[in-house]
Image (cartoon, rainbow, N blue to C red; front, side, top):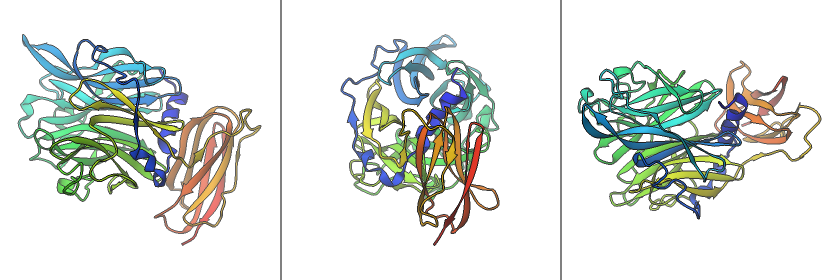
Length: 432
């Protein structure tokens, strides 16, 4: 069981990025020892795809989609499930539970015959997973729905029944896609009290998809948010000649200081590539700086997961047409400086931002005396939170955070910190 302190480290990695410094996201170096998960890793799996990885400070956790053989009413069938593995370094993996989530085999459940392609987040002391399910009784226009489960150890999961078809938490009716073939490959990020979900909309079999978006206050009750694409998609196919001109799917999103960053699978009809896009609100997406429109940012791969660890981004991915998991690295640019004094400061503190007044960015420094959860955020005069800057378990040290306020009205704002029992606030003024 991973404590609140450790899972906060995962969240810290997600929020300390600056999307204005992302050219490195088009320069990836595959690990020389690939694959990190080979064909003999899980002998019971027919295939392994779409890893989802979290890092708690000393252990990497991976949940991976796999296909396994099951006997259903006396007939052998190959069905989707989710496996679980851990690693000390993200390279050498040990299977913990090859079938952590399996099909329910319940005719009244949306995941009767398939339960896979899941995405996991660490939310305080709980692992939460959203995954794809299938029940043949739902008919040709309702093949795929998304379900939810939770776990305290990553291995043993409890399903939570949702308001959607046959207990799913998100279905075609909610997604406004009654004529679609289904939903798949959810990816969820939590910011404050809001859950954000990006998912693949199955447009035409076998591989034509768009990416849709929904929000939830609890991870179970979801509301579709329309984008500018067909059927409300937030990421649509690229222009002719682009790497994603016929399909976009398999979203993998992390939170940034100014919004979100997404890696996704694109297809042009003959080959697949990985693309990278940026968004301030999760709805309007633009390609990352330096992205080659015809090549994307990475090669033939699908089912990626990217997390920032120290000075690098790490990507685990499934090479297309293989049953492996590979690893790649990219340099990380960030506007957050880590502890600069190994001995650590003698007291907690929060400095005055500089410059002040400012437009559009300013910097604030703070000190952490002892290991503890840290929450730093910006509020408007009415006390409404405008932007979460840090929500992480941090080690002793002096930290510097650049606050980007592009697109936020001018005025007086407060920035507040809570570090363990220490609380402090400062006032800053944004000018036009």
